[in-house]
Amino acid sequence: MKIAVFPGSFDPITIGHVDMVKRALPLFDEIVVAVGVNSTKKNLFSLEQRLEWLRQVFAEYPSVKVDYFEKLTAHYCLRIGARYLLRGLRNGSDFDYEKTISQLNHIVGGGIETVFLIAQPEFSHISSTIVREIIVGGGDAAPFIPKEIQIIA
Image 1 (tube, helix red, strand yellow):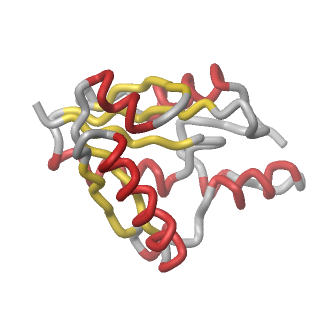
Image 2: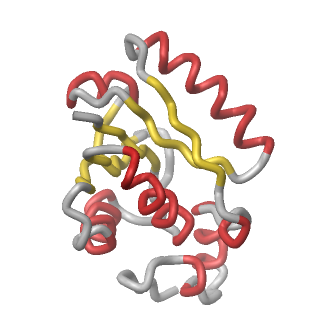
């Protein structure tokens, strides 16, 4: 069984994240959208809220599972039997960063492969960081988040 993990903070999930998962569905038997819990990172939304949003967004996709993990992504993959990581690339900076991380994950994760999908042009400007700034600033984040979730600033 080909299992991929799509890790992230998803604080909040964006339409770019959703597009990435939908495009990857034909490539894998199962995709685990997994929230990485980092105790040193200050999140805008609680883990419970982010997991609930992910469950709502992917409810109609039986091959998409939602989970969370602590510590190393590669160790989480080994624990659940995933041999692939799914990552999105919006620009050259993303590539430089993700290339290094993928090489480290390959070593730490016993040969885990990272599959990169390039963001569609209409989503390449969207990041959770930007969406958080819009929300905190009292702006309307609706154009950037899935219709299944509503965020009131």
